[in-house]
Length: 269
Image 1 (cartoon, rainbow, N blue to C red):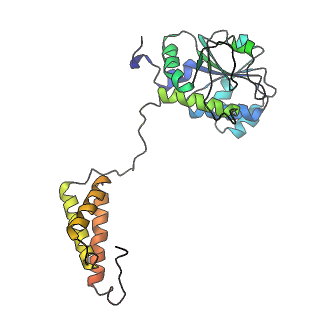
Image 2 (cartoon, rainbow, N blue to C red):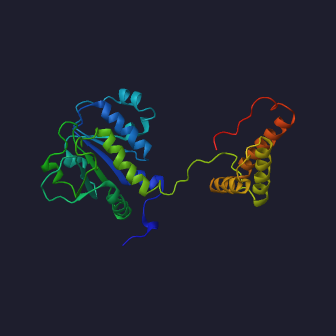
Image 3 (cartoon, helix red, strand yellow):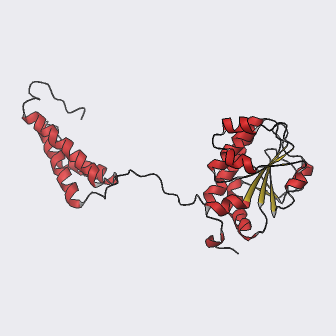
């Protein structure tokens, strides 16, 4: 059994405990796409098994900033050599097969793989086959489990780099990326106070009275709806102040005489 504190949640530990293995990759563009996906998701260890082409300069031109990954990338002659130090091997495939592998979706497998990575002495290897045919049954026999990304049955095959990105994303999300806060405005304000909201509601009502919005409508019912709408919006102090300033300016504009004879309409009732 493991606890959350056992998991490799720091980016350094995470990057060190997983290795991406590309077996007999056919297109250097897909190596570049894989490197970029790895960097996006905090991984740095790449092993290539008999790639059809390997051009570090071209890869770096496609995946900008890839030099750190490429400098440490390993090239092996056989899949067995690339997996020699792996504590756990994860194969990937889009094809449905009848062989009794340990099948999982990436989201289900991610927490288990993170726990294994925390306890194991060697890396967790994620193996991806050639673009045209994927891993063979014999190559999948080397794997402790097999991941398949759920996709539309009408077109299940993923581009190699896309598959790497999706699987690495699930690992990142279950590990170092868990609980990452969404971006906030640099000048985030505190929630609007009850007093600020009351002042806002008051000035909105005065503005609506000024443009004769209510007419035959029920002011109390309308203002009740306005208050509910704005409370659901959970305004901060700055937003409440902005809306109040707009309401005040509407009233002042009309009171200065700009609205006279202009046929101010309140809209459909």
